Length: 220
Length: 165
Image (cartoon, rainbow over the protein chains, first blue to last red):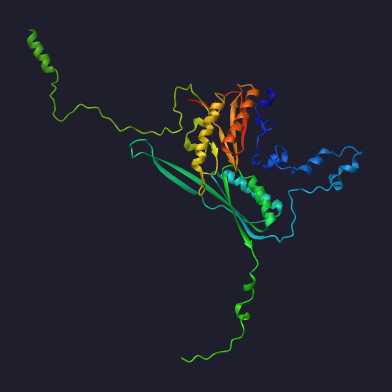
């Protein structure tokens, strides 16, 4: 029992289940570990199966290839939905990330850009707008001493990531992944620029559609 | 014989003539207001002090990190006052729930709805009691704040001393 607590992280989460379920927010790492997951299906279920059958014995050769296990019972992931509606297209997806710590923002930028590259999303540009500093000057003492003041400041650093040409489902997946891994103390603002079809009444120039009007003479 | 000698002695002593302009008074300066916020004053060298306490607040973001991480104080974000009140309550609550065991200040992290409380404890309580206290804290605080609360602990043999002041 003493060994269990020696210097390691112990949250005791496995021992205590809340009486009611929260809309809890498990981090991606805990999802991959498969512990305390809120979702009924483990995202890493495929990977776990492959790890369960090490390619050592020949007797299990027919069942070793991971894909064959699923062929008999095709399992559809309840979280993936397929629909026939046309997807909304986004010309630009702009993520503005703000935080107090520049190092945290740098590491988050590396993570977001890597995630975009892995998903095949083209990154338009990554730039850092200048920081904003909010300063307060307060009296140092509780009573009198007006000449002695104290100054505080709050610095907000920004990082803007712009992605181009996404579909709505790609954007949804990317945003969900990137927002679930948003570090504490960091806020994100998302702006999407949609591509829409030109409305029908504007597609043809007006002067082509109007009927030919004969010239009328105006006598003043 | 003594009288002329005494008279000569009196003449030898410098005469103190009172000057009307001179006054005898105590000269004072207005109180020198040194900053005292979040600083441990230097003493005899017998006071053990942790890294957190040893550094003054102007070292935040240079040598120190933040004890409470949330988005309330960012430009254009709301809720700073509410988070501050919650932080104050949480620190007092944890100071009382783990009496004398807290080795250092508690770090509070807010990720979306989740509140993560990171505490460093000394190993002076039995593990069974610690497990109970962890569960008690998590359940009570999550009922109180209506959000999931997770307590992440680290145990340390004794308080980590940075220097003696």
